[in-house]
Length: 476
Ligand code: HEM
Image (cartoon, rainbow, N blue to C red; front, side, top):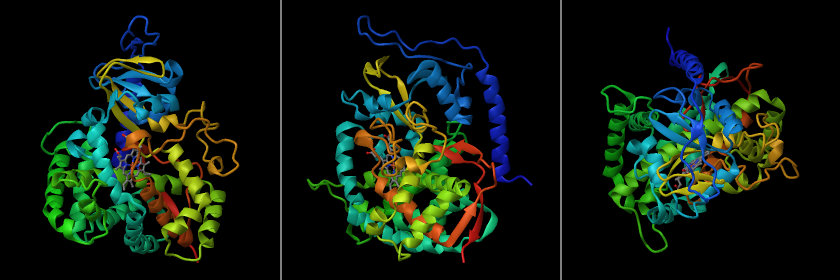
């Protein structure tokens, strides 16, 4: 029988084979553009790769190895071909800092993200620029205050408890698949304030199709294709949210949708109905896959590092109650904090970010011509041995007080980005991961077979493609 996992495995194997062939294609390295005379800047070096598709397959099949090879050959700023584009890739904290701080306003998020996810998430806050972005962020921040987060935690706790404690002990429990379901139900309750059942199932399906649309390989509105399905799903989501905005503005809901409808900046400004719809659809995407990847990879690493699992369980058992408050989460989890940071370092869930240079500019001493499409490689940057000793080893100890392996650059550890677009949901993600892990550690222990490494694909970041099977045992 053909299962989605088997189909995924077969597709990955095929892609790996094809990537091997395309990478052997002889492609001469040359400068992206000549720096202006006397500027003292270096040209960005790179090569196009295989005709038309460029390096796209190798960068998807093994993004880490691909990035490390380019870093070794060309340094922190290089270019590569990909389906008709030349993409400038940025690696390492110095290059990342320049773009995030964006001191000359030379880099546009709108133009960077538009070709990647524009049709599905247009006018989401991450896709806005400069003054308009600042104005929207001031309003949206009101939906992420501490009291708002407290409200979300109260909404999220019962569902997490119910679902996690209801998971069956099993030698082959598909953890990533299950945590995605949990988070989709949670999104319906906490983000949208919807009741579970047919309404939340439809929401989850439309949301899933919208995200898949943004990741489609064939990027055209062909009937039956992922792109077309994504566009129709987005239209349904737009109608679903638009219908409810007026009632939510005057209601008392504590879900994120209601909070966004009532948010006002200090100067009294609030979102238009259309803004709310666009931001809601974006927020669902920003929160969902990123958190699912982080929790799943943490469970995977704790499954192969039983000593750390044991220490984290002791910490969770030390907490007197099952119903955690924000204050408990803030102070009572130094080991889980360190383990979560280490997972974000190793498996950056928002692995690549995009910008476009809107003027001739410079990054790390390299000349970047106007209209260059930039890929900020957060994932591989946090796996460079230049910045992290033994970068592929899971060692939460790096983040514990007194550890001597702390990063030596402010942006060496930056899974939530930096500058004005830095993640608005960092505390939300932190609280969500801890609330799930608290239940899981107290009610189960788990392991993965010796030598097992999950089959990975690429979503918003490195993503398990095999459902991430673990052996889950219920604790007495
Ligand atoms: C482990 C989980 C998460 C990670 C690693 C993560 C990472 C990131 C990163 C790297 C960015 C910067 C994008 C850019 O510069 O182009 C970002 C932006 C954003 N994230 Fe997150 N995120 C996570 C979870 C969440 C959650 C749970 C929410 C909401 C509840 C959220 C909301 C946002 C928003 C609104 C932005 C755009 C901010 C702006 O443009 O001003 N994120 N996130």
